[in-house]
Length: 459
Length: 181
Image: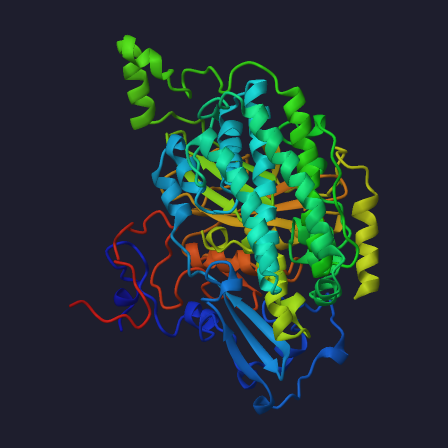
């Protein structure tokens, strides 16, 4: 091959890769799967805690736990998923088993990758919320919220007070729905079909309210840059009051049903434990980080919306095991209900979106009587609005942890780069640590307690 | 492991939450600025790892996000004096739990030799995020233990989030899919 040939690029500009190049040498490791023990270097095994968290030399593990000399035929690598009821989507977990004990494991993800970050660059800011809402499909309003907050930070607009409180109400209802869904599926993973039915039943109440408010049960596109799409429906106070009263009363039932139940405790206490140092090192957030005793909740520590104006507690665990994560989510539902009560009492009157003609389309009624309003509406929905140049990272507390949006604007109507830091994606890295040394049966419970949503993880 | 844990934890939890006075980091002449009210530092490619190390020592205990941007079609962005724009930019968001403060590290990575030091030895949580950046942008991380594609199939060609990647250029590929009929 001549020099000219190696430098040649294909029509779209990707360089033609020489098989002897650094790129191939450094990255060709036989793909994404968990490799057999025989083809993993001993020093690699010795620093390995799970396959994804390889502990760097600076953070030594316990040498007694490393079995470098393990013969290859005593263990077995099995695939768990990508299709399994407890993988909550399509997560493929490769586990090396010694009998029933998990020795190594590695999550293989990407089965739900649909290029949403790329799509986000093709959609205007006005349309963007429709895209991001589909990422974390169990908590769509949180995605819309972080996207809208990033856009608003770049636009430099202040929202009317009512819009902020509506967002807070919806975000907390969403947290209730998401955690109830988790209680349901976690119950299912542990063999408690009763909890499955109960959790779905209660979540349905919240989704019913969302349908009344936003028109859809999921993927609402309701929280948009500049406020919300509409005001709350008439009589929303009564609806919300009924929902939270019912759920709060039933939570006590579930507490009796699950929390003290010997089988449940036996299967969760001390299972899937992770230390605070490991959780921090792996950038874990949300209930996983809090279960290790670190009181880190962005609503409290770096307040956004009006979380500094409401009274609630940050729930913290001690042991970092599955039971702590269960207890944290369970009690966070109660805390969210506490916040919703305060929002009910203190919901301000006023506008539900900012009256900035640049961002806000005219009211529907005006379109019928004013030509200018029609043009204005048409322009916003076809061309979108231009956002000043700049870049920003906003982060909020989703039910799963820190969801962040890194947005770069080049001054046009579409984001130049829209990156979502998905808590599921990052938290997935803790899984090999939690699974190591546990049983296969507990692997299902532990996977569930990480609460991954693959739509958000793969984006 | 448990002893290390208690040492690391005691610091962040004891700090009064919501405090804005952050840990002081000796940047050693690395350009810094603020963007939309957030702190950003712009270390040169060679100083990237050292700058992040200095931040970690100063109390930025968590790497909350790591991503990249391809500035191919938007070269005229605002950068502080002394920072020459390159095609790629790797963006790392560091978080200090004790002072509830974030700092963003933006590094210029040239197109011809898109290689940067891995943060994995400082923050093991960088592993998945750096794999994603490699997968999407083709930026390689030296010192990363397992730099393979993470979201795309392992035999995928091209880096989807690059600006010169043709959207819809390739029909969706599946491994071992039958060829075109």
